[in-house]
Image 1 (cartoon, rainbow, N blue to C red):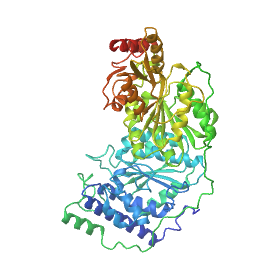
Image 2 (image 1 turned 45 degrees about the horizontal axis):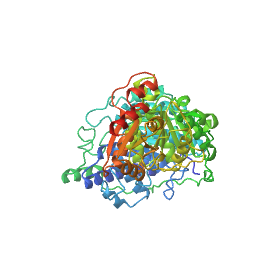
Image 3 (image 1 turned 180 degrees about the horizontal axis):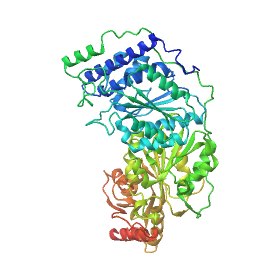
Image 4 (image 1 turned 30 degrees about the vertical axis):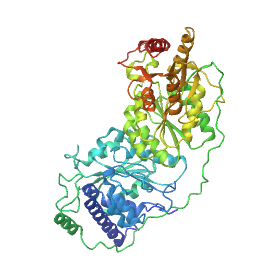
Length: 623
């Protein structure tokens, strides 16, 4: 494998001149591609041109024929609006013809306005600011876990440093002593609408990273030699992460744009101005020395393959086990047969029971502390390098990480998320701890799968199913213990459901999941005593929903009652409503419809009419 340069012997005048010319070529590409598309952010590309030139053509070890190889260095463009310069660098490196840069932002182009993995040389989507450093932390952890000697670089804007998630990631990177991680902050002073919080006071950024325990350097971000020296120093520092704070000018190199407000997200569309900008950048942009990416040695590691044998649950019918406990058990069992599975938690591991996995596989468990945004970003970084991450927290706290989950979907990430302590059934802890919007949130995520186990057997089986299912999978677990209702041999599938009670004489269908399924089974017994028969369905796959089974039940009985420990909006009930949009039947939703309060779980379920008594009342109103 090619070694990094750690001294100045390779810094000949020809190479430095080529890197400077490459920076201006990248500016030119950014200018022309945004001019062609009549949209984009050329000014923010201009501020980081020297940085990108030096990283790509003096340091980055990357095999363009194997972009997913874990041996490659990684570059995460956290300031995703600078996508044109990334596309320009990739084109100059030979990833695709330079002529393709003119397709920027076209509907048929992989070169989108902000980076996405539609381009195979992009690992994760960026553009929602403040996320790139978290992803880079996940990548660095993955490389350390695999003992891969690559470098993880991420380029941040100074404006996004106002995001708290940046500092969540900075804290964890230092705590984990990630010596393979380098963050470069492009301090170009100007935000979207005004000067950034600290302008060109670079010492503020340096002091902050220093305080978190990073190795820091302040440089002129337009000086090629300073950039090379700083990156050399960062790579040589193996004790922890490095931050390079670079003073730059927005619009650098273009006279009417340089360090001027009003140019954020504004392409040069006027032909006279375009001609002036091109003159400013210069006509002679031929390289005195050829520049190309260094190719790393092929990894000698054999591909890690999970076992085809799936772990099996071991429970007794009627045994009382909380699904959150079974989640932890199932996750640990999965870890035994699939070495790619890793787990993360936000200091809730003794409640989500990811602790069970940690106890068996401490090296594959990452404690992210009370920083849920960063936890999801780190998980996305791990997933981008082939891991299968399960990130766990209370369902309510995942609301804080929702934008990261949304971006994970755009990244087409293979992310698994578990939200425990869902609903009013958690009891006395009160409304701040009750996840009541999580099903709605996760159903709205593009391409997501949403699973909701009702007993220990289904919880373990759905953990296995989540690992097998590509993309974002959400598992909702509950705090109360519930009886085991399935045999250990029961099978489950994405988009499936279970009809637990049925007859030809059913007068209504009751659909539930989690704790409310058990209330539906109690209601079945009570209604049977008064000669009313109901069909009971376990809708363990909330998305995609089992439309065929639900439609048949609605057609057979003419009345569908959904019952869920969730807000009435967006959850299980509305999943059923969508499935029955073309079916003529009566539908009633039982859900939490007002702000809850602390109290025993049984009393709260009764108060909101989502227990057996509430179901019985609802059925009797119609039957």
